[in-house]
Length: 126
Image: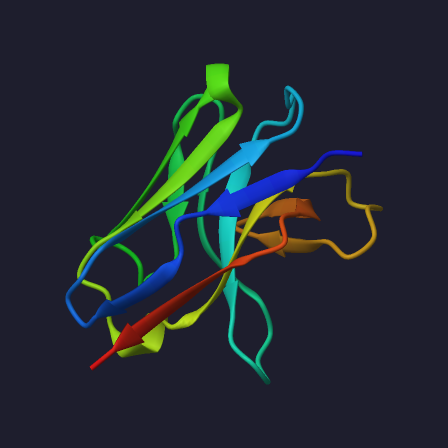
């Protein structure tokens, strides 16, 4: 079973930066990897995604502030978050593309993500 391990969350002040990392326990042949976030009482939402060719997709609120990147050799994906705002506070999850029948999955930007990390908390104070 694929395991995804996130790190890099923490607490920063508004305007600060954080870099999230996610490493997979094994080599992934999947095309897309992504980052999602969730706040209590709300649905998990896609933040950014990247494919093996480096093509990226961002939700509108992240465009221009967040940058997703990946290192295929290290099975890693990163999310550089700059100009953080209090509304960015959330649990961030790393995810990888999976078949549509994978339980617990969801679509973002037309891609089905079904394997998830445990999450890393991001807190932004005003």
